[in-house]
Length: 177
Image 1 (cartoon, rainbow, N blue to C red):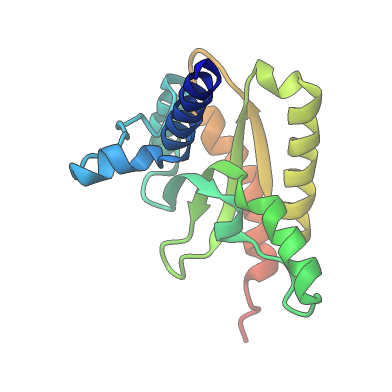
Image 2: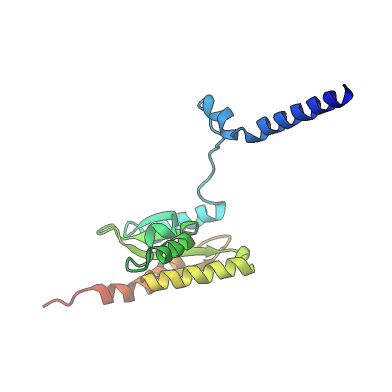
């Protein structure tokens, strides 16, 4: 009798365990129409300060897009075998660029901008940065890396962008007849 009682208790514990751990945690929230998400800021305070200075520096010459996935601006070459193409796409799906400048005329990417703070000294971040550098270079998108600062000079940003973009504009302009 005692053995049956212990077996029933163990069986009930197992059933309860299976019920609790097999239940989809989303079920509790989605039944009410409430999902467990909260709003968060898209830019850090430092990125917000840079964005403000960048906007002043470029006036309305370019559009600024913050936090753009790498996959939104580059892709693996079409001629790659499917498996290899997927491998390279997976490498860029979870990475982003802090800011990109877009031409308002044809909506092409003109420049990628990365803000580097002290976290960019970590080995894994260095490896990711090198990958981004090479991927963007191979895709023909210029990248500038700037160290984060307490204050950003609008004039300095304007000069950096101008120095990078002027040579590009000369090579893309067609000669006039």
